[in-house]
Each structure stands twice: as structure tokens, then as C-alpha cells.
Image (tube, rainbow, N blue to C red; front, side, top):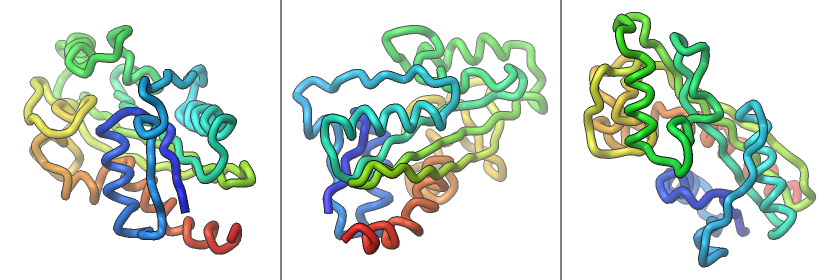
Length: 203
């Protein structure tokens, strides 16, 4: 059974593959990097994670039918009224640059007291069946934004995001802990619980 990830982001693809492969061994998982020599830019014109996730899945389905999974995720900072939100990957402008995005976030939060630097990571995953039926799953992880980045693992805002209940950033905690508590893992967990039922139905 083939599943295509509508992403060329190597970090995101690895997280999805590492989570799903041992739980659903029947899946043969590929990504845009396996399909294209130059990863295409998929349109993301929605105003919500749900809209963008579905848009990316539909775009890939139009070109490669079968099981498709698409993710849209980002950081919501309460002191910034939910920003950067759906613009998380390109918060500092194009081209996407994690370091620039982190620097802009710290600048926007300059002077904000530690207790008011609350935030959450959010992820929405769309799974399209071979019949083009959409199934949506979401997950979130609450935390705070540090005043300085720390850690070298992870990507995006991980060096700044300290999940609730921990004193270190996602970039310091490592993959094993992140797999248990992250926003994307939460959404993938919900999907993995349902996916065997979908597979049985469509076989």
C-alpha cells in the first residue's frame, strides 16, 4: 500500500515516516523528493491550517492518485494574537529561513514578560483516500517561547519552544521525547488509530 507525503521538507517527512512506518508496516511511504528531481512549490493560500492541509493534499492527488497525506502546521503565540500561525514557515519573508524566522519572533516578543510568552504548536493532517475522500486530524502542544534559542536538533521554532512540563527546548529534548508529545505526533497518532480501518474498507 503506497502513501505519498505532500511535502519536500526533509525534517517533516522524516518525522511522518518514522512515526508511521513501525505502526503500519504495510505502508510504502514516499514524498515529493522521491517523485520530483526539483521539489515543486505547492500553493498554500488558505487562512487556516485546515485549509492549507487540504489544499496541499488535493494538489498532489490531482497528479498522483492513491493515498495522500498532507500536513500544515505552525506556531501560535498568544502575545502576538496567534501569529505567526499559517505564516510560520515564511514569517521573515521568502525564501523560508528558520534562523530569520526565529530572530523575527524574538524581536516581536522583545520586552514581553516570561509568563506572557505562552504559545502552542499546531498541526493539521489531511489524509486523502484513493477515492478522494478527505479525513482530517489535528494535534497541538502547549508551551512557552524562550528568550534565547538553545539546542541543535529539530527545525523551525524548536530552539525557542519549551513544551509545558519541560525546562528545555524541543531542539534539546531530542526525537524520542518529541515523538511522544509534539503537535505532529498527536495528529499522526489519531490518524494511525483510524488508518487500518480505512485500509480495510478500501481493499
